[in-house]
Image (cartoon, rainbow, N blue to C red; front, side, top):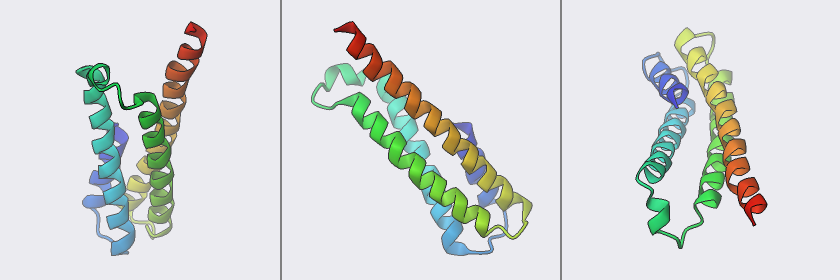
Length: 121
């Protein structure tokens, strides 16, 4: 998700008004980005076929659910602490955009994995 990376870079290159708020925003965006890349690699190399002990659709759904909630909280905190600094406002805006995109990804992964499996039985 490019919006996570742009939000991280925007916050990182701006003067901070509240250290704890923006460090939390950076930690959440980077952890979310790393986990998204992890699931992309799992799908690209088809690791899910070899590790059948893990319910990959459930793991991906829980990742998107938890990541979206944490990202939404981080974006709200970042927006409330931005004090009209353009880089911080941009970071919070891209955080909100990434939250919306994560909700759409969560919905599409649910629809593809759960609805497709239930209709194929």
